[in-house]
Image (tube, rainbow, N blue to C red; front, side, top):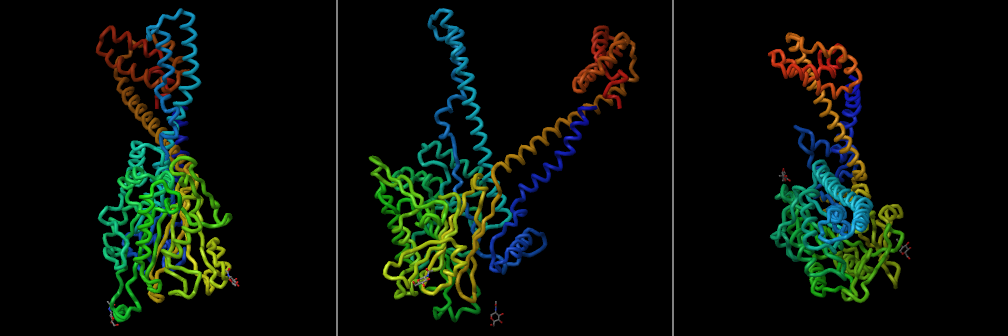
Length: 601
Ligand SMILES: *[C@@H]1O[C@H](CO)[C@@H](O)[C@H](O)[C@H]1NC(C)=O
Ligand SMILES: *[C@@H]1O[C@H](CO)[C@@H](O)[C@H](O)[C@H]1NC(C)=O
């Protein structure tokens, strides 16, 4: 009775707790009010519009939904066995094997008994102090990695379901180290595609396009939507292919094979109502809205790089991007750059300040580590790709192209505005400040100060609260230009994910035990009612002791014995001597005949 009450009570508490926690975890974007920004730019209405998309029988209000919605994820950095390299062999318990060998003289040497004891003791100590803790650590890490994969997968799956992005990107550092061997790289890629981004696939080779001015190979936004939703636009990160110093053709080719190309562009055109705009389109005032999406490996923009060939490829790509760009004055054109390492900015703007480190004596003394691009490389982005300028005497007065840069790398995330003050000759340097400060000081609207936003997306790792970026891009027909907005949506640390699943497991375990318990109780009851019609004579001699026995025996033991005695006494009715004897023995321990049996209803 006591045991079953405890179980029932535990379930009474656990079941609702499990239900609430699980609901919260599996619907977290709903509770965290996550939604893609929309042309309305009102968080409340964006959220309601998302709810509406999940409401049956209600048509989504397409005017309130941005046509390009990018789910941007930073630095998943899948870790693996490489961090366990030194201790991974402990799981085979080598010292225990050695112990058996020494103790049983299996190695064929003839030590005297004293030596044997000494060796064996030594092995035993190593087993307890080395093998056991190390293998515990290995298994703990393995479990941790599996949990982490599913935690990241939970973020992708849940947000993908709730927010309904049109495109997905992972902004580099898909795996945790560029130094792992090909086999381990393959294992992590498998985990990436089968656990974290399950259902996702890499961008197909035939979709990669090289920079081109005529927008050949343009994709229509909204066409092939189901496939685009599933594609993952992977950006190469330093932990995937290495920094300029250790970036090698081998590392590049294994990345390309499993995750996609490192440099390419995608061009999208928005289908629009030609009815009202045909005339304008023909005379060039209102050209078709276009998005130019540039995926760039910026790890080898800075020098020295150990592979000149790969650096030339990146430079060549970037030059093609720049030379094939549309006129800066062309409206309705948006340039979205997806890359890994953030642009240069002074210390204090983001968590990471500028930092460079170089190899010394190997890898052509190339870049070993960097937090930001160099000032020159950053300037190349802003003035080359985006066509901005510190001089107003250039086309578009130096204000360049509409666009944004998304990247990762620093894990903490940052929202930056790069600008150049044209009225501060002669130096006219690029400066950076946070986006919120730029807004509050009014730099964004200041005449003679062109600028561009750079969003460093906070990592999706548990230590950074499982963040995800939601970027919307929509077309403003009045201004005849694109506009965008970006928000974050976090899940919370991985501990929440673990906690909820552990509570669920406990609840499940308790339910199973309790269910089994009820089932047994029922079986016992039905059989014991059968017993009443059975002659009870053979059990007589047990009666004197059975009451005592039944009282201090735990219920669970009683179950077994009760069943046993039932079985036998039932058969004993048939009159076989030996069975009768066993039946009377077991009933000593408190069978269903006992008046105080816990199984008497
Ligand atoms: C096209 O324009 C005409 C007149 O401006 C209007 O009556 C018609 O409804 C428009 N058609 C569409 C499909 O918007
Ligand atoms: C740009 O320079 C002008 C002239 O020196 C100055 O008045 C203005 O505040 C500067 N703007 C910014 C955003 O630095």
